[in-house]
Amino acid sequence: MALLTPLLAFLYHLPQVYKWLLKPYYVASLFMSFAFLIIRKTPGICEHLSTQREDGNPCDFDWREVEILMFLSAIVMMKNRRAITVEQHVGNIILFSKVANVILFFRLDIRMGLLYLTFCIVFLMTCKPPLYMGPEYIKYFSDKTIDDELERDNRVTWIVEFFANWSPECQSFAAVYADLSLKYNCAGLKFGKVDIGRYGDVSKKYKVSTSPLSKQLPSLLLFQGGKEVMRRPQVDKKCRAVSWSFTEENIIREFNLNELYQKSKKLNKSKGDQSDKINESQFPPLPEEEEPEVDAQEEETKKDK
Image 1 (tube, rainbow, N blue to C red):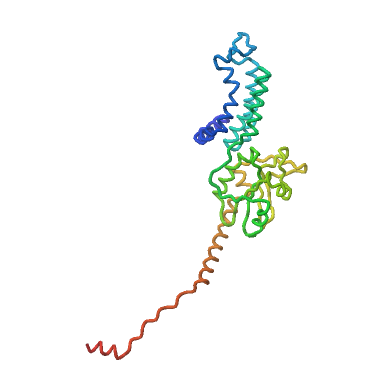
Image 2 (tube, rainbow, N blue to C red):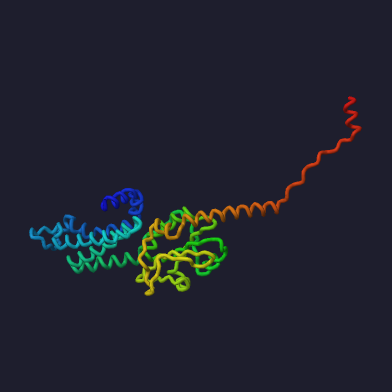
């Protein structure tokens, strides 16, 4: 059952996975992930490689290479247990495949290892994973607008994500957060985002660290009346985030989104009633039309005729 569940989830999201894999970033990443396998198995190239196999076949893995690949598979399975989205699963596979390729290439030939490592560094510096571009009801704040928006209407509850574009965890969480905004956004419950990698003052004011060691990215903060009510993940005394999974179910449960959404509907109705009253005051009812009076003499003449 433990193996069947992720397999069914992968098959369910297979059409979406194809769309991601066809993007240039993932095409290049997959090529780099299978680089050693391609070189080791390609005729005309593998014959020139060294091997430690007893049969001397250079076009097949030796026992040490098999051990490295098995160890890689175990690490990927452990990391994917905490993965939330399909993007995180694919990202973990690509990341640790590149690490394994570096080890395998250095073991095979130090020159090939240096060449592959250089290519990975250049790719990391020049190519960024594609950002989420789907539908969302999210307001993006800057360091000058966040305070004004949070304090504008005390009746409005805000859920704000503090993120950084360079963080893989934030990139993977973007689709989950956008889906929540589509389901729960209304006049009394709004969703916002602020890039604290760009606005350092906001990071200091709201005490959300951008350090990778703190593991505070992304952070979700709930504001009511312009003041912070709760946040996830929580932070301990050493300014490190307490482990917390950013799944849609956890967010709905921890932030009581269903209850907040029901309360926000009342705010919608009250705003609608107020707007109706304003419209009525601006446009008073028209006076009733009076029927024209007819002279008595005219009526008598009509009867005689």
